[in-house]
Amino acid sequence: MSCAREAALQALLCGDPAAKTSLTLALRDDLRRGAVSIASERIVKAPSATLPGRPARPVLLPPQQVPRRRLGSLEGRAALVHALAHIEFNAINLALDIVWRFPNLPESFYRDWLNVAAEEALHFTFLLEHLRTLGYDYGDFPAHNGLWNMAEKTADDLLARLALVPRTLEARGLDVNPGIRAKLAAAGDTSAAAILDRILADEIGHVQIGNSWYRWACTQAGLDPIAAYAELTVRHQAPRLKAPFNHTARLQAGFTQSEIDWLEQLSATVPPTP
Image (cartoon, rainbow, N blue to C red; front, top):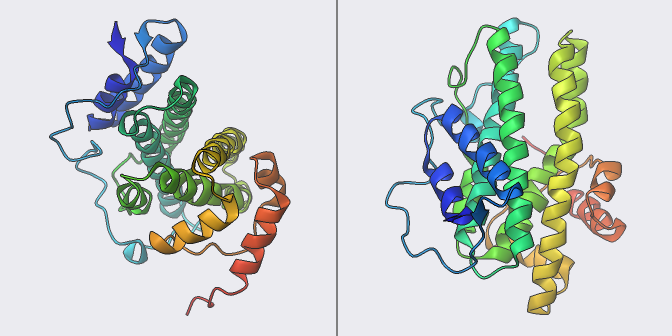
């Protein structure tokens, strides 16, 4: 019987988006019917290729150099949908990476993140299909690599990965999703708005999984979750989050009111963008 974590690595290495999503969804299905096993020991053969596998396009630029997306035109709306699809493509890679990279964890840890990877694959597929109805394809607009950059910074530290990817970068999606959805709906793109409704519902669950395992890891290490998070954001130069925060979604996703209050206080100290 094949190993689910080995299969996750192979899906991560795959550079073709369609094949990556197919491999990820098939792995989730195989896991559900018991066709693959979950071995928690370290994977002996480290990948020789650069991670993650990705297509030649889109061109990746520094975040500040990615052109701003204006919804007043079809091209601008397509660029925004493309940016959302790129986020979901990276989210597939992030979930697959945490499965193969970190050994000796409970089986439920790997099952949780393989389910997350499959849902991210569905999100990417929904957005890609919609993007094509607008006359564009994945790779037609430039993008940035911010999500994966944080994965590289936290490649050797599970606690940091849980703190700074699902609880920081992905949780930020809970905050910005409603505003983006409203803009797309106002532009008449009800299909994109419906996709964002589905994504928000699923992402609350994904962030909740990140919160749950972050607290588990803090307990294992005897650390206070808020104090540890503050230290990790400084050590790994995580982006400082800015208000407003989606309190309802964050509470549903497992953040405590104390954590949200701390984020609000921290946000008040962030210098305004010039």
